[in-house]
Image (cartoon, rainbow, N blue to C red; front, top):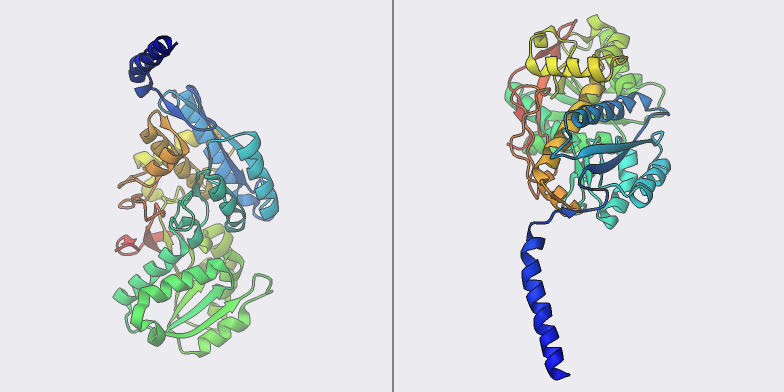
Length: 405
């Protein structure tokens, strides 16, 4: 018996030794991955008060169709399950749980909105499911020390505040600054970045700071109070409705302060037209994407590729809607990371590759703007180009500014 047992043991060891080389080259897959497919999910407000952002999900879905038609990524097709959350946090939680537990997706990619992403962030991190290139500028989404499985995409709100501070310190260091901000994470994150960027000069440069609630009917009273402070610069961290009100009120009262807008209010059609194009001349915002409405990009190869994509895969959509560009570029970022994963398609390696992006240039982004990440920096985009409105279109102002430097 002992001899037979010894022989059996030796046989098992030998079998393991022979088998080991065969295992060493095998592919490693996480949930939602096969030899032919990578299944990912997202929730998007296809209905409800923020349904204009549905363009992001539609563009991502269409872009992955394009990728699949061209052979996929490393031979695998991308299957995106994009569900409606109505911009409702409880609905986003319900749909995300379905994606993770029933559909067994590999990752959540591109879910849009701060309230919806806040609602699912802890759940995804407990489950160790990557939440990548999430559509929100909220600072807490890109905090690897606390949430190692969550990563944003666009410049976060703190970075945008820093960029405005850098611009003013260079161009108008003696400015008297009034600040108007929305009383929520969106507004507070911007203002913290702005104050951090001004550093020791914050208390002397900022002469008045006021907030407003999203339920307020107007901000006329805030504008009058800020004007009376003697400020010659207004930093206006508001959404389109309130920014349009601010522009109109400043024109009515002939307050000639330099007006810096949040990029959330950078739309000509949604903000500047209601405010009056003549009233809006001279306002400044920030941007990182090329604008299909700007004739300067008519012969740009990146813009031509985008327009060709829209014509073939989204023929009924308006290519001038910048949210389509947002989704298009987000999808391109995910394809880049997925390609770098090779056949090591585990959730851990997906996060590792997402945290290892180096100077990635996407052809639809403005020149000089690149994506970069590290294990301690989960904000891929940190650069913005200041843009000034000339009464008809946005014109670049100065050089690209990087919040990291």
